[in-house]
Amino acid sequence: MENKTNSYLFDYLGIAGSGICLIHCLFTPILIFLKPYLQDTLLNGVPDEYHYWDYAFLLISFIAVFSATQHTNSKKITKWFWVFFSLFAIAILFEDDFKYLPFLGYAASIGLIITHFINIKHCKKCQTENFQLPS
Image (cartoon, rainbow, N blue to C red; front, top):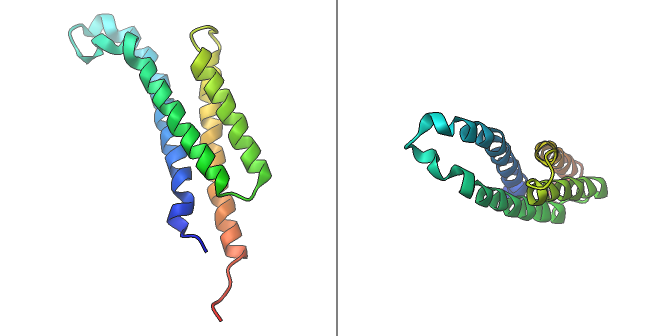
């Protein structure tokens, strides 16, 4: 049987990555709005460089989703992982072109977090049902 910690590692990575991304996405507009009031602070580079974080979160999310889907036996969970990741990727890549896409990104990020939690619960249930006493 696979080590429990290793089987959930990518779900925890996905939860952390999506959660941090959600916080980043919600607070970056606030920081940009406050920039004129906070002159000569660390916010001077925010408008030009915050997109690099988006791409980092996209990469972390891809790694977490890919790896989590390799360790689950539920086709339904696998499908939802890729649906939410696809929506998240579309939102990140095209958010400058369409004003509503950041909201899609928020929803997809929340969907990824929930799907990772569901996958952890599903994997724990499978391990309990498949547990066999040593002979």
